[in-house]
Length: 355
Image (cartoon, rainbow, N blue to C red; front, side):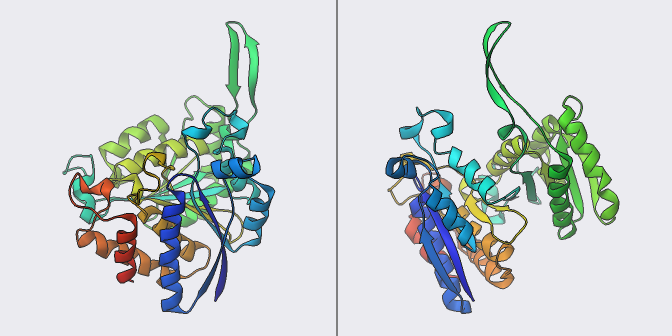
């Protein structure tokens, strides 16, 4: 099979970690008889410097013409003084919207080899945890009406949280279907005791419950969820929540896995074309030093093989290779705690050797 993949390397460590994922995918292609064609496009700060805008039209067109998209990271201090609508991060919202990607899948798994890196007490994570966060991606406060105005106490700013029935239904269906394939437990997270948008969210989520009799769906307020993630993360299987809540909770979940450099993500829509990226940022302070952890991006490539190309065996080959490398005691600098570590290139080499 031949697959066309758009590469959005972006800024900071983005080029390094995407290059690592490309090498791993090329190894998969060699072993399993696939051809992956990679085409780079500009996004983020580098696009601003080259084209004067964070998301050039050519990038959008290239992504829409591809079979899937692999993204590194965007942003950095160099562009922090730009207006909000011209900053690198604006490109992320733009490309997700252009591709119709309304679902973000963020797994948070504690690898047995990394239990010692988890900041939680040993008794809390004795049995590990494996959570899938299903985050709504193109609605809510990030896309709602916003502005500045004069109020009672002077200048004030506002952002609007708004969700339609359709937006809630389609993300809830993804969550229920994901729970069906896992352990049949779904936690819907909202703030229904305060927010009207959350009351509609809760209502619609439970209206779908009858269509998934093998899934247990429970509600949890977002503040309690934030607490429960550090108190007892193993209680969660699949979490579904809004754009902003999902953004915050998925970053919290990433920290209890031991390193944000380990976690991939998939952004999906109504077709098989997806956007795959690590959940961490561009880390400009270590860019070009060959010490970034590429595993999250490599695992994002594994998610691409599974969700966009339906290549389950190939996806598992990458996941298993990462497991073997970690079990063998190899670590990148973020996991080495001042001890010996492998460079970005070297850890990629080890993963390739184990495929």
